[in-house]
Every structure is written in C-alpha cells, then in structure tokens.
Length: 549
Ligand code: NA7
Image (cartoon, rainbow, N blue to C red; front, side, top):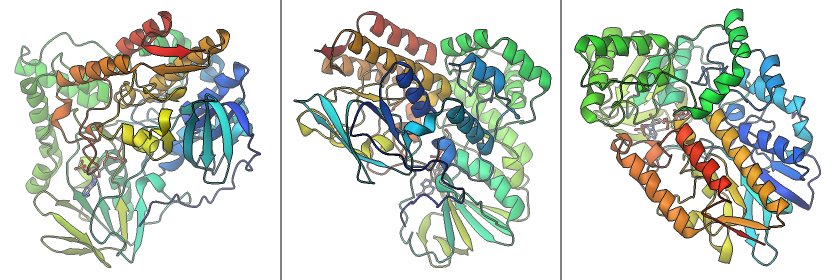
C-alpha cells in the first residue's frame, strides 16, 4: 500500500495556473513557511512561483485532518506576527484550535495577500538540479513543469513525508485503511465499526478518544507509550483575546527571545534541590495548566539530568495509574524513557479512554506485531479482526520531505546521498555544495523543538534578508563553507550531548525509520540563542557562508 493523498471532496480552490519558465525564486510548499515567503519575495519585487502538492494552502494543516487534530501551541501564540493588522483582525475561537480552524486561518491569509495567484496547486516537485555555469536551479514537477530559478527555497515542513510501518502483509487487509496524515476530506464514519489503530504519538493520542467515542470497538496497538498532558482546551474569552491583542508586540518579542518560542517562566531550582512537596506542587501545577512548556520548564535540570527527570517520570506514572482503572493497562501506558525526549502530547481524555468498555490496549512490547492479514492484525498472541485499520505511524521527519526530491548541487551531488550519514547544515538554513538552496526549519535549527510559527518567521526573514544582501551587491550565490558547516554540526551535537534527548528512540533521532542514521537533528540551544547567532552571522557579512559574484 502506498500513501496517496486522498481525493479532496472540496472544489479545487485555484485552477492550475500557467507556470513561468524562469523566476527569481521557486518555493516548494504552501504551508505557513511558503505562504510567508511568497508574500515577502513579492514585496521585495521578486518573481516567485510556489509548487504545492495539495489543492490548497495550509501544508501540515491541509493534510492532517484526522479526528481530534489540534495544534499543541495556543492559538494566540501559533499565528503570524509579521502583520499587526492580521493579528488584530483574525478571531481565534479556542485555546488550542482544531485543524479546521487553523486551515481557515491559512486560507484567510492566502485571501488577504492574494497568494494563490502565484501558487501552483496539485503539483509535486520531483527534482531540482543546479547548473554551475548558469548559477541557476532547474526545478521539475510531476505535472511536467520545468522552471529555471536563481533561488530555491524548500518550505516543505518537518512532518510532511508520511510513513507507513514496515509490517509484513501491509497490502493484505481487505477492509478500509487510513493514514492520519492523509485523512479523507469528507471524514470517516466509524459507527458500528471494529477499528484497529497502530501508533500512539500525537496523532494517535489525539484521535483515539474521538474514534473510541464512535466505533463499536477500538483496539490500540502501542509500541512506545507517550507522555501526554491533558490540554484543558476551552473557548477563548473575549477578555483574553482583547488582552493579548493589546500586548501583542511585547509578547512577540518575548516569543522570539524565549527557549521554545513560547514565553514561560524561567526555572530557577534543580528538581534535586526541591523538597518532595515543592516538586509535587510544581508538577501538579504544570499538569493542571495544560501547557507542555510549563511541564518542560518546571526545574532547571529536567532536560539534562537523569535523576531529576526520573522524578517527573515517576510523578506522571502515578498520575496515569490514578486515571486508568485496569492496573495492567495503566502499567502498559507508562513510558520508560525520560520525559520530553520524545515529543510529548497534549490530549483530551486520552488516558480516560482506556476505561471505556469498547477500548483495548495491545502492548506490542509484550505481544509483538507479526503481520497484517486480510481480516486484521496478527500479533504473536492472536489475530485481531477489524473493519478499519488506522495508521497513526508518523513521518520520515525533518529530512524525508527534502531527500524525497531529487536535489542535486555542485558536480551533480545528490542531497540524499550527501546526507546519507545524517543531515549536515549550517544553521539549518543551507548546506555546503548546494548554492542558493535555502531550507526552512531544517535539521540544525530549533525547528520541531519550538513553536513552529516563530521559527518559520525567523527563517523566512533571514533568508529574504540574505537574498536582498546578494541582490544589492550584485552577488549571485551564497552557500555555507564546509568549515562553518562542520563547526555548526559539532555545536548542534555538543548541545544535544548535554541533554537527555539522545536517550530515546525518537523521530528527533531518526530512530523511527529503519536504516536512517541516528543523529539528533534539531538545535536544542533554544530559539532566542539561535536567533542571536543567525543575526550575528548576517551582521558579519554572512560569516561562514561563501558569497560569490
Ligand atoms: P509520531 O509521533 O512519530 O508517532 C508515530 C507512532 O507510530 C509512534 O507511537 C510509533 O511508535 C508508532 N509506530 C511507527 N511504526 C510502528 C510500527 N512498525 N509498529 C508499531 N508502532 C509503530 O507521529 P504522529 O503523527 O503521532 O505525530 C507527529 C508529530 O506531529 C508530533 O510529534 C507533533 O509534533 C505533531 P514508536 O514511538 O516509534 O515506537
């Protein structure tokens, strides 16, 4: 079974436009990165075309329509800051908006800035080859387009190459199958159905309670349990919205200077120095707040000290056991890796769902998965029969959407091969040997460890400034020097080595894709520190990059 995007039941919002033969910039992807890029490039007087595989804008929020899909950053913080008027006009409804609300926001932005006229929808970029003599890129698509451009920006997202599990017999199942990242636009009715779901990351954790409420029976196949916090989602009040709108400028500055792109209190105490009472109070406060950053910043040494982290782990285990009635199920739901080293989740009624009579948890560590059969899923213990199987099995994260395109730089070197031992970038923005190729929120930048909107805006601003710098000086190319790149990769690894992140088999480490090198991909030094470094590089004439006439 291959993952093919579901056919949209909505009318295509934009006819496929004529594609120019030559532009100043090609942007791949019309999610929040690609949309903002197009807006900025246009304002800078450049010609640009955006290729987008989906039939409308939104990227992640166009594709991930599974039941219960929400962002886990608050709406008033997970939004563009570049246009104060947009900030004031758009009315967010919920603390943690649903996928339809976020997609509505993306569409609103597209309308507001008339973006769709330069976006070619329903078109996947297949190749981009650099021509050293002409100092240009030739970009090709699955619709037969060929465009020549000076600048190529991959705004392809970090979680966009959806992944099916490597399980024997995956094509054998005769019922319906869905991947959470390619959900049918018309939705799925689970009423009266026996449903099996594989995967308990964010997509599983968010969709399981909703599917369970509808299905006849839901069986959850869990390989690794998630740490999940109750989201405590609710409608925003008029006063909250007005309050944020009144202080937005100061808030945006605080976002940019923060660690996660979400301002939060800075911890001052080690978990090991705190009394048990203080610790319990701090964890309880974080749990009640429904905010992941509050949990991750309870104590100074949470992310760096195993002993400190163990205290949080044990506290969360107790919480899970206090919610889940069946002791074996509760035990199975308790993760053994350090808290925060795999992406934690925000949920609505996740643990409570396991108290329902129509929900069964299968712990694949105790009962390994053997194969998919015509009728369902077979483990070493038995065969489970289903009408529907849902794959909530995640993504080839951070690099998949880049290496899936046949990108070739100097000397015809392929990006996929160049990165075969792990991605190597300078600042997560460019990679040596690939002139004028920019990446938005790529490995080596805070990216998935941050509020993506904050990181996206910072990258887009930086890239557009760099392009302006070249244009103003009559320069034609920019690319990282191998030395600067090596030093940055070492720095990223050095920071990761002081944290507990490498201790978990996470998609941050590429561990969910067989054969993918184990490298901790994002920059863990924080959004504020990273921004300072990027600004300093630009101030020093793009230090570490080679600029050529
Ligand atoms: P994730 O977080 O990568 O979760 C995928 C889940 O699927 C995870 O529980 C995996 O277990 C499980 N999985 C993957 N392959 C298998 C096989 N072969 N057998 C059993 N289980 C498997 O993806 P999501 O879509 O949930 O969330 C992605 C991000 O979106 C999330 O982090 C937020 O940032 C938003 P594993 O943990 O690999 O053992």
